[in-house]
Length: 301
Image 1 (cartoon, rainbow, N blue to C red):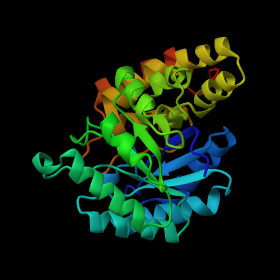
Image 2 (cartoon, rainbow, N blue to C red; image 1 turned 90 degrees about the vertical axis):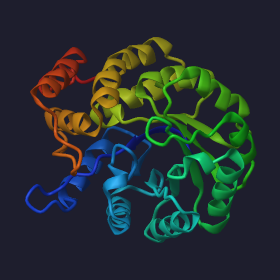
Image 3 (spheres, rainbow, N blue to C red; image 1 turned 30 degrees about the vertical axis):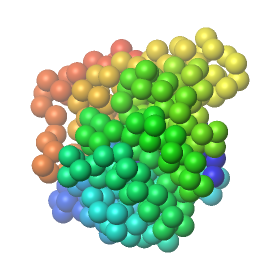
């Protein structure tokens, strides 16, 4: 498995009449993103509303994705859970329907008991019990248990730990993780505004939600950087940095979904208890898309 490039943590569209996952828009989005040249997808990540999905829904999303996504491009599933047993069960279930790897957040409900040794044992047990590689997920803004550089240095030597997604958005933390990661353990950035910087620092790529809104630009950052065309990579990065900050970071799932509706994908509404954007939020999204020249009818790079 080549854990590198631009991987999209995709949204989950719902039928507004029933509240069930809508397979046709989901597939339509995947086909359009594939045409933009992205290297893979994460279903049931934070942007995909993982905490609001049933386990059976996550399996279904992976099955639908695998039908669309060719084998040379990744399908990763978010399968983090509070118990080690549940994390193993979820990972095995998505592996059976074609997931290439799983993205696993740390357990956090008993936060005070989640010392590095407990978290290490959790991850090692999961990694040893599942048939696909495991990607660690460091996302302290949502899950208040951090994967420290020291913990990564230990876990990264496990043969079934493929890498880590760091969504802190802090380049000092990213740098420390890069320094600590064993050679075969890939480090991917989760903040789209830091994609170019992460590549400069030696990162393998990114799992970036702003790439759902502007897939061609996100791919251009990666491909041009790898080709040595730093100026072109930097120009593409300049266009996605503010949408990451003002839409993905500040407005969350509802902001990303509204942006998708405006740029030609299918977004729709988030699942309760998340609420759709108010008019102020919608205006912010429109402003950011216009500034980045991403609105339909304008150049999208």
